[in-house]
Length: 170
Image 1 (cartoon, helix red, strand yellow):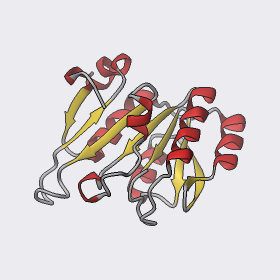
Image 2 (image 1 turned 90 degrees about the horizontal axis):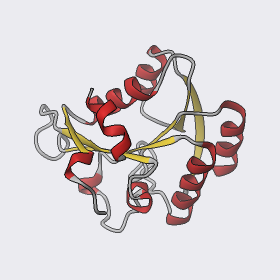
Image 3 (image 1 turned 180 degrees about the vertical axis):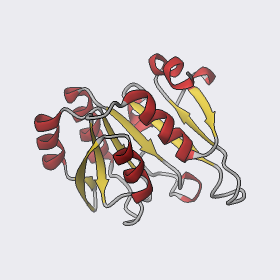
């Protein structure tokens, strides 16, 4: 994936990147699609912000699109936050067709996709990343190095569409 270095923002870990994204793009009462099952720490943070969580069940290919589409029509979510590669706790990687369909739904319903790729360093090389398919048009890519360097270090980053960078940095 080609991107401009100005599209990358370093953070104190992937968790801080997720927090910055939430505080920048969400307001109390907004709806957010999340993977069911997902990361309880992130869910608690979003709940504390007054955000309504919309759980999307997953199968072996990724999120169940019929549920996602139904939730989008009913609640107009602002974000979809997902671990697309080595999903925690299932270990499933998003299939290419399902990734393409998620991106189509994002475009159709006008929400941002936040792709948390924390386990990128141990993932299969051929794993599908929505940020790559999308070219950072509707996807904000989040990752970090804490899991492979030293657990107590918090080194992360996000890569985002150019139009969002100034707001995310502020």
